Image 1 (cartoon, rainbow, N blue to C red):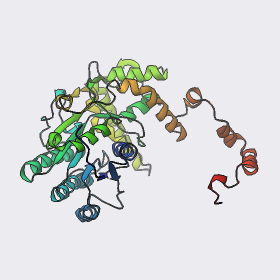
Image 2: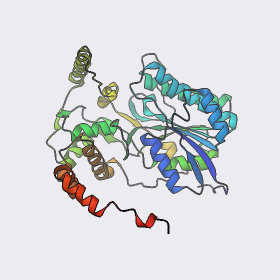
Image 3: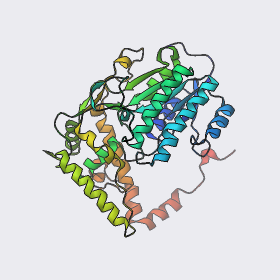
Length: 381
């Protein structure tokens, strides 16, 4: 790694409430507090849908770099997808160009076609038929490349594949798949043999972003696929989760895509029918990527492997992370009463929790008798 500067640098992180943004914010606040200070403004302080907000905030803060992880929900309409994923990202880039500071943009494999060993130069053709999410992300990548060539923008575009990691407070992406298995709502395998995908470890990404910030001459103006070195067969991953949770389903029966497609069509019509009766039904937005369950998409990371970046946890993969993911998400989903099957089996019984559920009066009396005095170590002497 290049020698670090002596002065403390200031960075602005957009989208700090999401899985990627939150992981980056935690890393910089805990790992580099003396080297880098991170500001992660909420949308109330800085709305990237408003160009004036971007200009005023960045002029006032005067950061040394900007990281953009913001994204509209997968099922957002055209306007929101355009304003957040594209226009907001481009206006951030314009501001960075004016301030002459690096812009780190987090993109997605949704900009790529299906296939294996896809390179950083590969892209989908820009077409009206693309879903709003993919279209807006693809347009952003093309505009950043244009601004790099025509306006001298110092940017790095980082494409992520299927992201896994702790602290995702939404059930989305890989965690939607994990939830479906844990909830025993996937009776069979909704894929076919041999379908491979690339995966991104969210806990490794901050180390790469940090390295990219410190080595602009090497990483400026380039796109990198930040993915685990080896792709994973989807069926193998599903069956591994099933085995780890000691479940009977999903059974190793491969459901053809034509059946899944009909089921999706039926659910969409059922949701519309229920809306007539005032019952709002929202299908998981990941259904737009259902076709990807039946097509391989693996991202080549040759330029990442050839760079000066060193993987901080080279042995860590989605399979080695499964034990921690299981404990974290089953605990969280259990607390939210989304899944109750595993609570006592995996984590045992908590005495205070039992008292709260079964003997609230006795618990209240105990608290009043023993645990309501001021914290003595906080009392001024």
